[in-house]
Amino acid sequence: MADWSRGNTVDEMLDAENRRLADNLASKVSRLKSLAFEIDREADDQNDYLDNMDSNFLSATGLLTGSVKRFSTMVRSGRDNRRILCYVSVGLVLVFFLLYYLISRIQQ
Image (cartoon, rainbow, N blue to C red; front, side):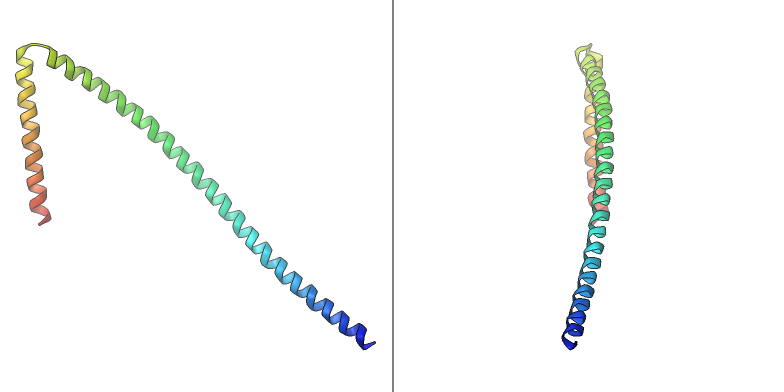
């Protein structure tokens, strides 16, 4: 009779150990499942962000194309427009150097 009760306690211990391991596995699986959902959600958000960036780049490309066309038209036109273009170019270069000088003074 003692052997039967000892076998029963071993079975109970093994059953308790199996339940503990099963609970541990279940918690790990639920954690992995939540991580997989978060990764999926983040991937969807990043895809939406990239799609929006693509449309923004296309609109910027359209604006730059129009600006280049207007600039080319101005360069091909008469002498007065070329003089204005030179003044604007020199002004932009001077503004760039002025901003560079001011920023370098602020950082020191």
